[in-house]
Image (cartoon, rainbow, N blue to C red; front, side, top):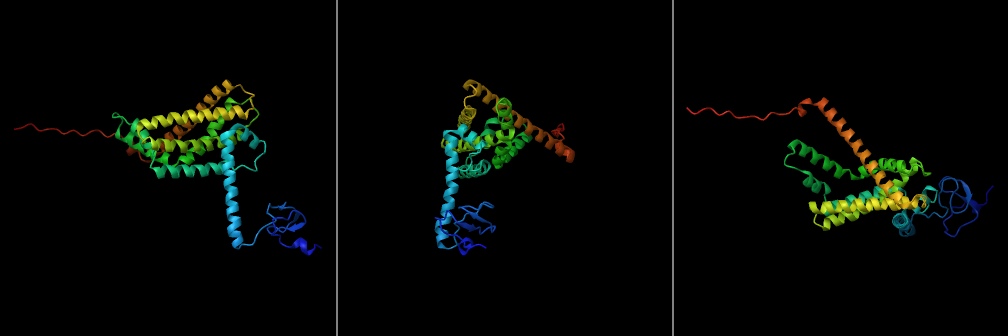
Length: 294
């Protein structure tokens, strides 16, 4: 039979000992957290104290996790990823959740500033020789890419993880671990993309500005990858070996993703042709025959 003190709901932050009855699963335990479900011992009733203390406290902890993770990924990325893979995770925000959050922020800023990469790229790639149908398809594809940037970032992760796993296959990390590492890397790529969006907007959003920001983006992201993998392998791989392996791994990931996209487009064209063959029939230009003057 338990004593009255052991079954009383605990609301005191200073409680560190004594038997506690969990308010969530009714499990009896000793300490600040339930060993069965993880519920805190020092829960508060929902009142004004809860409103003014618990909610800001919870938001601060979320923000602290995000800021801590981003700071670590910016200052010591490879070491941070290695520690996370080895189990040091309590202070980090989950990489995929952080990716979705940063993607939402990127889209918000991009739409807020009225920035459109696709419009600039279409102006750069359009030619007078291209048919109207090809230009219309390109415009439709660009719009789809602009609407689904977050999805593309997520879809690219397995391909880049494959490329880097292939180039660093002699190291001890397996493919799932490389997926996690690449998810962390993509978070910083999104942060860099956010800075690139602001730079593109500041430069006026022209085709010339588009070329500049694309070069800056490519160099910055590839340079970051080199730093990550150099630190991740704790200097087991020489620096110049990391550089060329990172470049080739990035190229393998990008080209394999491009090939995957091309297969989807080919499948889409085949499906559309079978469904509506008339849409792909070439239309002969009509000519007007002039009657001779009488």
